[in-house]
Length: 353
Image 1: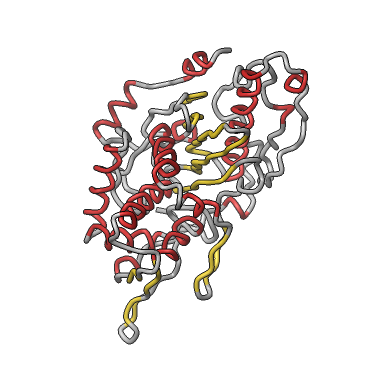
Image 2: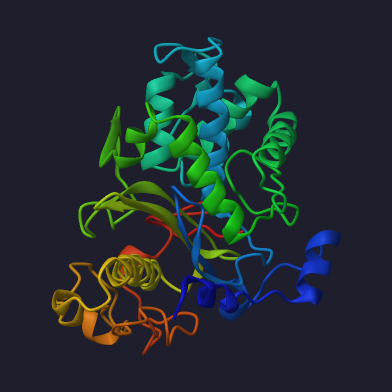
């Protein structure tokens, strides 16, 4: 299969596109939420796409745009890494996931540095911090969201509209897998000096601590970012990047039924991309023809198939038999790690919209 063959997997429904244009009806079922894209970050070649232009909820992938705006403000000299940002009462009231910023009559409102804010957004996907950043940069979060949408259009994200800085549920808040891949690319391309933040393993502030929700970091070779997201309407989302042997790819999966299934799906697509590069470089390679059947070192929830090389399409077409989500849920049982901490990302006590 040639690279042109991958583009035939693009599925665009005119009815869904019309609904997106009108800002109507949210995606409902797991099938309606799912979308994926695999793209070469250096050539922009699309290796695989599946409903990549269908309207979806970004959830906390929104914070990638919040961070893009924050990085631009730093580059303009409006802020430095040591600048202190002070929470408002509105920011402190945001639901989980959150850092725990608070306001009191006696002590006023908490403040953190820009550096701490970046880490809180990347690692803990803190909604209170996202609102605080939006209010600082835009005056109000609503104005900041409008600025986010305008800047997104300038970056080529033509099917994305932001209604807030965090990704908390809002029917006006829409994107596509393709747009999230382009935003991931923009962060890596435009701010190489800040991209390392997306590899931050954990973050602690006062008594609060958190571990990066992107469990593929350190588990799948070459993965070095970038952001997870979750709401009940969106399902489990992940935009990630990986680099091996001079090839950098972007993989976006939206609408996973569980965090574990989503992670395994992304790992499958990453491995398939690098198999495709190997096939192109030496289609007759004996090494490629006998790829190891090692099990991916990823913790999956009970009832979810483990992704391994034996279950993936073999040479010469890594994605030849690809048909949507390749990891199937065998039972409704989910491990505690897959239960969300709240609106906007993954975590502990469920608090849904």
